[in-house]
Amino acid sequence: MNVLVIGANGKIGKQLVEKLTNEEEYKPKAMVRKEDQLQQFKDMGANTVLADVEGNIDDLTAAAEGMDAVVFTAGSGAHTGADKTMMVDFDGAVKAMTAAERAGAKRFIIVSAIGVHHRENWMEKAPYYSAAKHYADVWLRASGLDYTIIRPGLLTNNAGIRKIQAAPDLERAEIPREDVANVIVTSLKDDSTVGKSFDLVSGDQTIEAALKTV
Amino acid sequence: MNVLVIGANGKIGKQLVEKLTNEEEYKPKAMVRKEDQLQQFKDMGANTVLADVEGNIDDLTAAAEGMDAVVFTAGSGAHTGADKTMMVDFDGAVKAMTAAERAGAKRFIIVSAIGVHHRENWMEKAPYYSAAKHYADVWLRASGLDYTIIRPGLLTNNAGIRKIQAAPDLERAEIPREDVANVIVTSLKDDSTVGKSFDLVSGDQTIEAALKTV
Image (cartoon, rainbow over all chains, first blue to last red; front, side, top):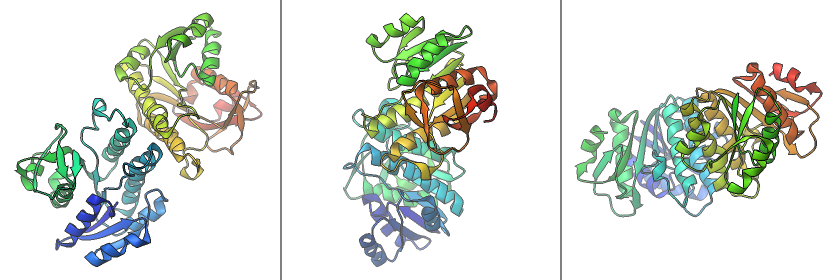
């Protein structure tokens, strides 16, 4: 199974690519924006492609050719403004979905944010961020893709514990980025997660068991 | 015909409300954000309502109750940042559409911007602005509303000449705000504009004739 990881250079993306290289059945392709980001993924044994979600859809479609799945874990980051949030987290995601559809990569997993499906939970100081995530999710649900929408809580750099809670609506709580990557890997393996959207925080269920309940 | 004008205090909105008060068959309701913006519309003989597209959908739905049509001509303006563009021009428009649907106000006219339906035309310096307009239009087309999407070119404060060009794709050119207001009034009268989207600039056709061709 060929998996394009968009946003591979991010903290979740990097761990995801590495985990996928360790799985017999997966061949990840790390998509990054800069030349100097390529080598680390080649060293892992992953395929790589240079492309930008702010670029044109043709380049993204070329990147998605031959892929079975696309994981969108790109984000403009906390240091950029609302303009980049709009163009990366929302418009970039829409372009990635269009590219996946055009390339015939049916499976699409997006990393969203906890609670954004309810307006009243949107971040007071950065509603545009919540809006961008929400609208990308809405767009994906309306697409013809086999989607999974993962809405993690407060991301930490702690080591993963492989114990989670996953449900349509959860209280805001922490989850290690590594466990988000673990959940993505397991979602790729578990077709029952197709067409599902769920909040995700650390919990006491195994990932395998929790994903069966979403 | 009761018409809610969202963004009534804007330069197009103000002229639109005034024109509608002069039409026997229309009763406009000017929606504004601030108390001190109300009187000018009362003086025109228009109904008024205090509400904000950045507010909650219930308030917008209340504003749309009893209306036959909603015109969305609100915009965050050139002086605000991308955050407001996202939350007013896009999310605000989406909320207005939701409110119109809930209130049973089937007819919905939006003022978009020329060319935004083609990515390659998006403003280089403010792609988020073009994106916000574009996605609001996409949302409206996907809604169950009887929509008209008007995409005017470069807006001027010149007096209207009531001569236009309207077509799916036009070269960027000027159009007086007053003529955009005139086109909205005529669109409300002409059901053949339902389900239509068009670029709009000054031209040599009468508004009535031009709208028959879109």
